[in-house]
Length: 594
Image 1 (cartoon, rainbow, N blue to C red):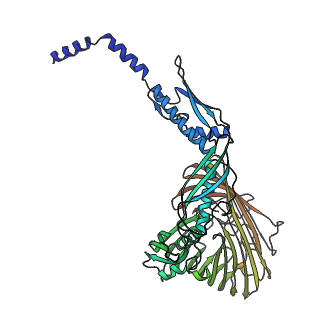
Image 2 (image 1 turned 90 degrees about the vertical axis):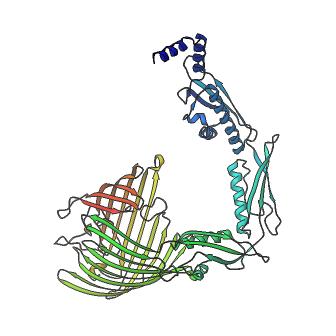
Image 3 (image 1 turned 30 degrees about the horizontal axis):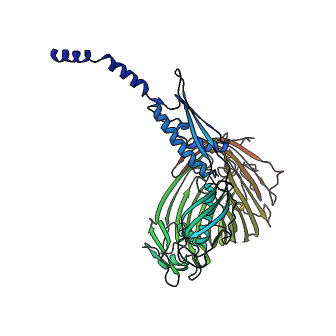
């Protein structure tokens, strides 16, 4: 052991002093240069808009990497310059160029990289030329033939947009196999103008054939073909395939849907190949809620989305809370030839409220149809219902035939947590039977986002109901309007945001108006805090009167976003608390309130 130690000491002593000096120099020259702590980078010669784009693609200006040597820093600057030149070309500065200067660090300071941009003139496209790599008849030969307006802008994004527009025209003009080959611009540096050349393959002109369906094991293939959005023999249009895809997706029957044009025959007729994979068609679900006004609540449902193989959706749902228990059975079926949907339902409801106790049975059937890319829906139905209503020891049995008619606009992107679009509806329901009257209801809800990363959401809703053709005394208690509760004016008990009788029981009215404004702020990715103000009024007049007393509730809560929807917990207070009102109300449920 001692012998080995002496040999190691002797070896070290023999290392020349020059070697040590060389090692010191090596470490000095090749010591790491760390990101933005040891250098600065700037861009000269570009306006603010172009400079911002260049900064986003610059490796050095991101300041997130380490550079072991000054040479590595220079190589990174060269890579930036290459990307800058590409960006200048893409922005329409065909004569533009980029370069850089590297100022070494001195006395422990920072190295400086200065990018110098010479954009040159902004080029304009003076000529647009369309070329094809195949032969076919009847296709547009120029942008003018395709009714495409050109702006002369020479940047890559504009040229790509015009190229896609032309391809869309080919797809809609009977060329389902059309595709982009390439595009290029030939620049004239003396005039700062360029010619844009677009090259396509159109494929043969085609007509629609039948749909060839595969993968439909439990769904009737003939039914799927009846849903097609084209007639056989008409000119091929790609947008009709998109609409067909949407119709199949809306059935909720398929996990995957692939629709593509087949090979055209000699007569130009092209079959449509439809490949499907069915999803599970039965669902069992449940949900729970709680509020101090209505107590604990829950629901249980079973749904079958393809009962007889024609996309019929049958659903049975049970709901229960302290004030209401119900059983609802419904079935819907698409009507492809009418481009609509038939529906029918039966519901039994038992209500136990401070205003009345009621047991009701309702049967209804009708049709619905969607328009304007499925954002607009019209519904019409006929309904039969009977109710046994008891209040203050008096029992009243009534019978009605009604014909509810609805118009609904719904562009929202989610049922439980909508972040885009808005919803508005108008329903008119004439009743005849034990009494004759008509009720009309209008509602709307919407939201806007703002702030950094749109972390703040301002949401609002409004609703109005009116009764015509009857008096408050004659109108059955379960047909009157009430306000108060989680879906109306938070902070007040169920149906209690309105006039009360001597026993502090809700009287109800012929009309109502209520609304709410809520602000939600995203604290972290899955957590929002919310503050809200609700207001509403119930009137004995046929239409809402703003002279009647308004009830205002306010409060706040949290929204925890989960994959199945937001879990919501709110506490609300009445602004002008009456002696009969509770100090506060608590609401816990799944989904945003609106």
